[in-house]
Length: 489
Image 1 (spheres, rainbow, N blue to C red):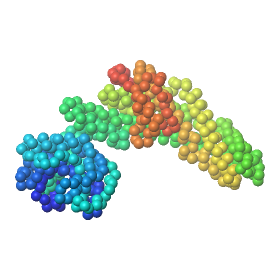
Image 2: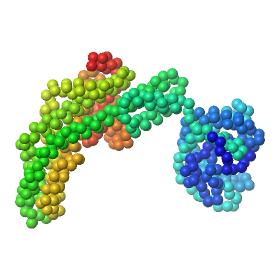
Image 3: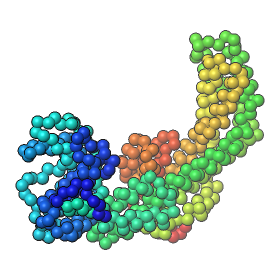
Image 4: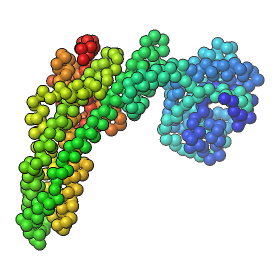
C-alpha cells in the first residue's frame, strides 16, 4: 500500500519500519517522531535519479522472505557531519542477508547505491549539535520484529508484507492434515504448525515438502486428539468412581470418629505441646474410619469401579499405540471409538486387573486417611468445635481434589502406559519415544524424558513420571509390520 511520507524529502531508499508501538517507546526528547523511525537497508540518493516503479519492483521481489526479528543492541553517536546522529544499533544476520540481496537486485536493474559510507545497521533517533548532550545515555537490548519492507520514493512510501512464497501453501497443507486428524487446535498444534512451515520454507524445491507438511499436521492433530481423549476418559472415570465413593462417606460415621478422637484427647486439655499425640490420635481415628468402609455394602461397587478404571486405561493405551502406528505408517486413520470398545471387551479375560484394583483401592483408602488425619489434627490443634471438625472432615473426603481423584488419575494413566508398552513388546518393538503433551505445562522431568528419546524398551523411565503426568509412549521404529497387523483388526 502507498502512504504519504511525513518527511517531505526528495530522497529515496529501501527501509524497514519498526512496529508502531515500539516506535512510540523509542521516541527521545527533541528527537524524530515515531512515524519517521526506520532502519535504512539501502539509501539511493535523490528520488529524481531513481525510477519509482523500478524501486517498488525491487521491494516486491525482496519481500518474498519470512518476517524476521532483529535486536536493538545499544546506542551509538555518529559524528563528522554538520550534526551528530544518535542511533540505536541494530543486529541481525537476516538483515545482513537482506542488505546483500538488496544490492544485488538494485544492481540488476542498473540502480546504483552511493558508496560514500560503509553500512552500519541502525535506527536514527535524534539529530544533535556537536556540543549538545544526548537525551539518552543507555538503551536496553530488545527485539524488534520486521514484517514489511518499504520503498520510499520522495513523499511516497510503499509497504510490501514479508512473506515467503512457500509459507501460505505450507500453512494450508498443515491445516489440511490437522483437519484430517479430527484433533483439537491446541497450543502444541500451533507450535508444530510454525515448525512445519519453517521446514517447508527451508526446503521449497523438494517435491515432497507439502505432502510431508500435511503428514505433520495430521500427526500433530492425532497427538492433540490423543491427549484430549485421555483427559475426557479421566474425567469420566473419576466421576464414576466418585459416584460410588460418596455414598460410603456417611456423616454419622464421620461424627463418631470425631467424637472418639475428642474423647481420647480430652477436649478441654488439648494444647500445642501435645502436637505429636494429637497427630497420632488423628491419624489413627482417620485410618479406623476409612478401614470401616471396607465392611460397607457399597465397597464392592468401589472395587469394581477401580477395576473398570484400569480396564479403560489399559484399553485406551492399546488404542493409542494402534492410532500412532496408523498415522506414522500414513495409513487410513483409526476409528477410535470402535477400536476402544474392542480393546475394552478384551480386558474381560485379564485376571490381573482385579489384583491391580485391590492395590489401587488400598492406595485410595491410605491417601484419604492421610488427608483426613491431617485435617483432624489441624482442627484439634486450632480448637475447632465438634461440628466444625465434622464439616472439615466431610469436605476433605468429598472434595474434587481428594485422594479419590488423585488415585484415579494415577491408576488410569499407569494402566494406559502399561497397555501401550505391552502392545509394543508383543509386536517386537525395540525402541520407544516418550511424548509430552507440549502445552506449556510440561515439567522439566518430562522434558528430559522426551529429550532422551529414543529409549530401549526396559531402559525407559517408567510412566507416569509423577502425579498428573500426561506423557505417553510411542514406538520409534519403521511401522510397516504395524500396518500389516492393522489389516487384521
